[in-house]
Length: 423
Ligand SMILES: *Cc1c(COP(=O)(O)O)cnc(C)c1O
Image 1 (cartoon, rainbow, N blue to C red):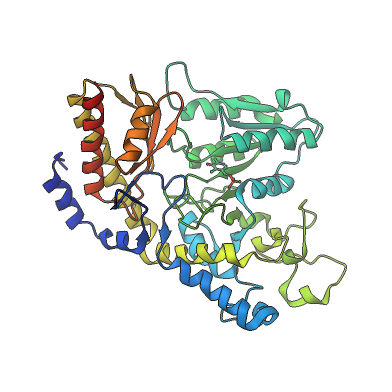
Image 2 (cartoon, protein in one colour):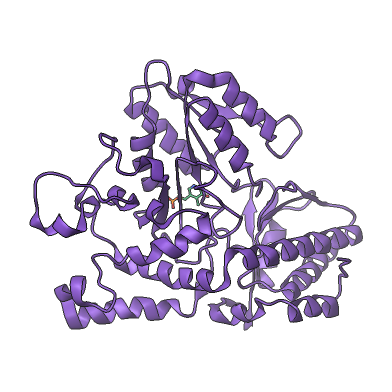
């Protein structure tokens, strides 16, 4: 499609957008009395208007039923998380029994590493991406120290080539091949948080499996953003948070995937608690642990329903729309944003450099050469919420659920005015 950088054109794209009404289903912060242009759905998704009802339901049940709410609320609390497995399985390309929701992301990655990082004297190395998300780096280091393994020796980071902003799939596959039978685990962020690059999860998983390693994915920036086929790709395990593209609220519950082939395995290592035992006999308080036959076996504590409720509200919206339509709009709106950036760039003497490669999801990361943090602050004052990373990168993620094409056009105008005024 031939884009035009005009208000009329952007409005025409909106008029033809089948998802345009969903914008009204979200709360937008306001600046100067106007709804912001929100580019940070990759950091904290906006609040769906229906979410409050789900939380209020639990508050009311708690007030009126107290302890009885565990079994007699409309949606009883003791197995509340079960409502999420099926819609979430569709978002990540899994079977419902491979999914559960519990804890938070880094905690879940730790717990999954207990099961799927089982180092031996020969096979003990881990491959991850260079400069992984800091929490993931701390996780790797502390897990390795927990096993009395020196991170310097065991953690292999795949690097980008000098002068390039993205990882080459071949470099990752070659590294997996090279480490070979010393490789215990490949664990990478499926979509890179900094550049927005989408890794070839299918090819990397296949290669990891071929050399006999476990393969897991941190899907924080991938879930609700890009097409995932975790089951068919033969991924061993994955985890993600729910507060980025999944719009489920700050610090909220995390989802995990455990491949069906690892369910009901006798003797699998796992940190266990009572919510992982069979429902039928859970309250007999027996000493022996009888695991649930699905991913719920990884559950430990009773469900924090107040934090799971917003996730259910959001999943209902994903269920209504489906990933296909979201991805279709996402591709179009990101392409339009890129077009607008390039048009503005022509008028402000070429200072933008998009470092996101063509394998991308919702996010464009842009170097603002010659401009400092003042530009970020200026955008904020004008009601454009972006994310700033030192030294001079802004990350822009126009979430397809609630961002409009007009937002992209208006952003371009604000950006241009800011730079020209300060020139
Ligand atoms: C956002 C993000 C996290 C956050 O972890 P929490 O445990 O939810 O605080 C972890 N890893 C990656 C790659 C992320 O993008």
